[in-house]
Image (cartoon, rainbow over all chains, first blue to last red; front, side, top):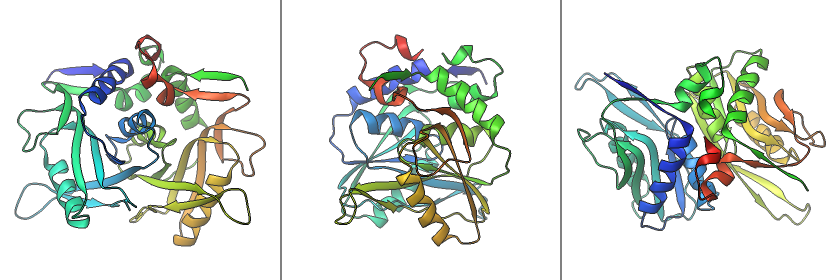
Length: 155
Length: 155
């Protein structure tokens, strides 16, 4: 599969575009770790929300399906009623589906919506808002920049 | 107070420097939200650790002191025994002190150490590892880049 490098500059302009698409008012942000962490940080600053929480998932082998997703560290939402769940990419959709299921079970009176930078059309669920369709393998800057010996690419 | 802009490129090279300083093996990372989120994401990728968790704090007025810090969303650490707690800056030190206190109370058998990009010498606690001394007000890229109209600075 072709790899495309996704530098900080593209991330920044895409995150700006994402904020232009999100026509919804929310009072907290949940980042699916690790992919959604940096995105949630920028969005939290932009929307002036200190309520930026993490949530974790782990894939494990299940006897009935190839891979199941376990969700943990479900955040305490305090008074939040509308919550934006963010991730870098909605790929198969398995993670987002499981995260949403667990969040909605835990907080039946809270509305959760999904925003991501990338979305693969073959995913089992579509995010409410996204910026780009993923057709290649994406080398996100947060994954690859630390492994490079020079710093030029990141600037 | 003088402001200095802290762009992504500096963040990347400082985060690389931080990894050269950290002479310790750890099995999980906790990001103090929001400041530590992006840093934790890069470190998690670099050290190939999926165990990257968030923790939240909120400042509130106390009758006895000017401001107290409440810590919430204490992560489930699973089997982690050595945990790196990260933040962008150790400023007064109040947040880190309270976070450490709560984590050590919750997990008496886990060792927690602190890493930050910036450290103010007047803080009440020093991080175990840091890269720069903070002498000015720092405009972190994740705070200011989203509010700029062009994307040039972030590249």
